[in-house]
Length: 399
Image 1 (cartoon, helix red, strand yellow):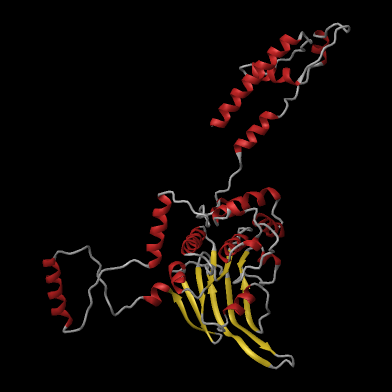
Image 2 (cartoon, rainbow, N blue to C red):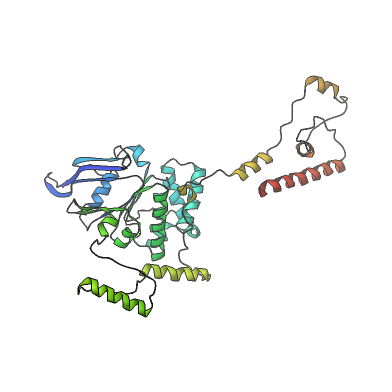
């Protein structure tokens, strides 16, 4: 029995009619389509040019009003601000401000989501490393190649840690290595529970990462379903074995001929895809530490996208230790009893406070007033305090 779920996207009778200047029907781009996208799915929206893919995506983003039917994202209108906060979008062409650097570009898009400056900085560092552009963070994006601009566009689509990603031709302009990294990233996001909608003409990429596909033609859904179900050829059987000895192969051929009643069959060796071979060559070059001036390989999924973002405990500890200790309050009666003659000047320096705090093994602060003494004794107290402070900080950083 299939478990209940709230669909991320639900379209019922979705229709979009474009009209001319006199409001006459000009083109029916989307013609009454129904579909759903479940949480955690990677879905491919496919079709030839003019089939209605881009129009459907624009209605999902709230950029176009449907002429008829209904569409909802996370159970709300696509135009709602709450909905837009949960969506990351990579358009087919990366529209970036060419005079901003890569770092400034991500900072700008992060500020649109009211992400704090501290979180923006951390996410920008992780995203630039993830897309292999950490070395180009201070270069203007107007100087980027198409592939590099595509990478920074992918990074901006994920700056808000969206629950629903819409990627329009995500691997367009990327080299085979970048294509593989993007596909691995999408699969990693799926494991975390993200929902992804992809439009692409590169069907091999779609086949590698998508759970389901929706194929449009003429504004209508022509096919929809899981790839395993759609692509399996049920009336044929393939047997994959290790390399067989000649005698075993002859027996197998004899058995096949006896049972296939003269029907033709084919035996060959499996072959890798060109992409697999290409990636093996690159991996071997990297193992040999071959230098390159091109794009560096990605650093894996960003920590905040992987859900492993934690507080910096070491930094918090060091900040606490570096704060000046507060002198304890002394009761009035004790102050009177321990008071020195008025003619003698008494003061407690910050250095002596540190020495007092770190000098007691029990951690208790000694409640005493320190009379100003000659500079030699004061220097000795300062040396001991610094030595113990360095020792304590060293122990904490080791933990």
